[in-house]
Image 1 (cartoon, rainbow, N blue to C red):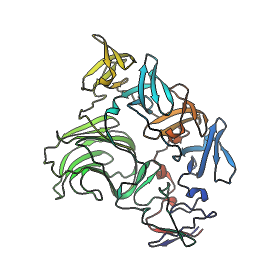
Image 2 (tube, rainbow, N blue to C red):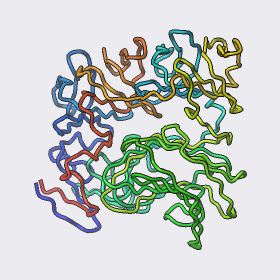
Image 3 (cartoon, one colour):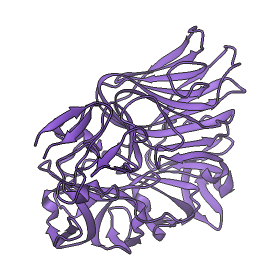
Image 4 (cartoon, rainbow, N blue to C red):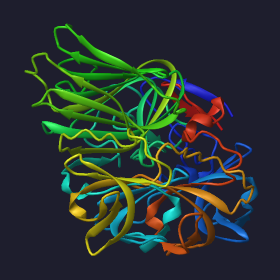
Length: 493
């Protein structure tokens, strides 16, 4: 296959036989379908098509509409990435449940006793979670106003560089074609791109959006990276297309995080830095800002790293959010971005050590009670404290730490290929043993939850063979020959 470089025009033989995807001429016709599922093997091979179902015999996979259905044994599968074909219904989730194995689920807290926690969900009805697997709860999320949750595409974002799907042309037989709405893995050039619920950045570029950030806000996202890490987060910025202007600027590097107060005059002030803990190449960041009180707080994986006080003049701050890559040999994935209002209270979860077997109940007013949670029922929590049983209205509770100082090691040594790790739309993940999967429902059991039936819209991707972990960076692990440069390509297949 030969590739001929052209300037200013993309001519892609996007027909039934050649069937190349956007900028990639190594796949069949079905690969050009932006709604295709993607099957990745441990060998590095990639197959596009549609997951029709799954049971103890393996995965039922159709590669192309006119192709026979294949049965794929899970022992050789690394990951299945699912296109978003099911609409997520309107729902309310006011609680995040974190488990000892690193799994995370969202829903409404119904009740809890000494054996089970019951979480009401849109995706599985009542989900019964074993109390022995609980690490923490975060409650009362519905009181915050949500300004952004996603991503679900590039609409509304200003993209400074990289391949843009709104300024290129595909011509087939002399007819201009509409480009795909998102770029598939392995075809991304320098800059920022969207694919399957996440933003991907390669080398350099700026991605910005007017967020209408409130004066007191919380910005949270998951970041994964490979190569060098030089990611800058601009918030309360008045410039959406470039890394300058008035605002705050948080620089992420492999070992440190540094906060700046930036101005258009270039008189930038360093507010301070903090060492990045040993979190590997994938972690969650939360930036919480209280403009009226000039305070900022930084969290990594829900742990407070540092709090700053900005004594500078805050006039001229904007309300935008931006992500800046400034360098080479770096690849970054951003997912589960959520921007909300905030109550201005600093959450110091896990900061206070407690005796083994004790639990910490954190209240909305930042009081804390150490003891044992006896039960949660009818909107009330009862904690067995050293001074006696204390009933608390659930709306006063901010969270519960069930285990402090306990490692949430997610390595799985069980070689059973039926045990998978599912990554969920809207954030979170779930480790489970699949029993059956079809277009209507998924039946599974887990190490910390009872047998349940799930809605397919919950799942974004599934990782198999967990005893052979690979970094979850989508296209970052692909062979380098699949990654294109910014130049326009012609498939000479």
